[in-house]
Image (cartoon, rainbow, N blue to C red; front, side, top):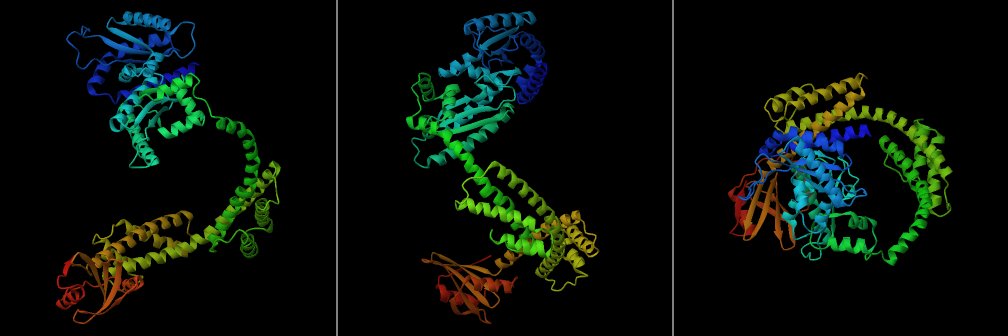
Length: 608
């Protein structure tokens, strides 16, 4: 009990420091001035009434006091929140009066300027039930020096509610605090559960589901923002229900909704939640006959599902647990994944007979699981026992262990092959880049030097990629000398992946820039077409009533077009591949005259 109390005190202290770091400067200054008095007062009353005290905090002074306000300038207003959820021999009024008197006397003995205001939690909830939120608002304004969780919960809920109503008030039916907090089971670390009911009865521009999802996403974002504003780090769980779903849940006797109605405290209500709460209290909201029948029959259904799950484990879980890794082993070896029926045969042929990495007994486990699945699927096996499940589990575990060992051996071989492939791919891409820059030939012995001179030194490619190429060359040399480590492979693979991705994108961007130089946009009337000149061929893409069409024409020596005919996308791709970096096109008078014949005299050409 002592350990728990110390932990709660430490949690409260940390929570208090986090929350006070978010205070405005003038409030923080006032808090620092009275903190010693508040701490001493808090310690006194918590020691006396530990089980009753939920929170103690400073109430800020009024921003604009009235002329009639006779409050002394040095008065320090304190809020003390009392937990009266536990049964007591005293009435709530008696409890309030007794604690208020003792707490007030304690404050006066410490300092005449300390004026505590003692509030019962049930009074806060009752004011919310009555549609009067002055007490919950007062609690939300409190700057805590001691908090078991309720002050923070009310504070963040009030801030979040205000944000939600400001933006979506016409859609919000009720904003309700729920969960362990309102059930009297909260701790300083408890989650803060709020539920929001959204009116979807008059939705016209979107579906109900769209309304719910759209509002929910924004409202959850506001919950994060409210936590940042208040400094309350407890997780705020936000449940959004649309009104029609909520009503269906009540009619279908969903226990979630019944609990929510019974325990929830409305921080905002448009006259929906409280009438339902009262109807539930009066016994007027009752499960339907269909709901009762469903609950009654659920026992037998659940029991039946036990056997179904055992069969499902035997038919599906064991099946996929060893079939999929078996197919993965074949894929790693370089064979496309076979059908389930073919897999044991291929495993035997490759890994038992050829590579000698598995035994016939190992493959028999896979065959056994395949047969059990087939027998269950066809109805030949009606039941499967727990004993069979245990036996299959052990056999499959042993099989997977052998597969993992085999994977390691195959992977080692593949890694070495991959190293060679990476090296050759990097060399090829580097040569492609150099060709794009006008360097047609680059011998292997000079490739790195030329690449550095043409691309690294000129700032076209970052210097870090030169280091990547050096690492890949070193890894290839280590491979040739049989000293390639797993770390070297992973490092080379990572460097090569990043390098190849960057160089390919560099080529694609350069290619796109070059393509812009061989394009003309042509406007004729209200239509716009595109002319792309590649080598001795012009491709003409036009927009018509039937969609886009592609044509091609030969380019004569004088630049004019002839032999216009329909073209296919493959023709364009073939021409592009043949001339990876075509020379910039020139707009000649002959070409312009050809465009006038094709599109009309009012043709306009846009270049660039």
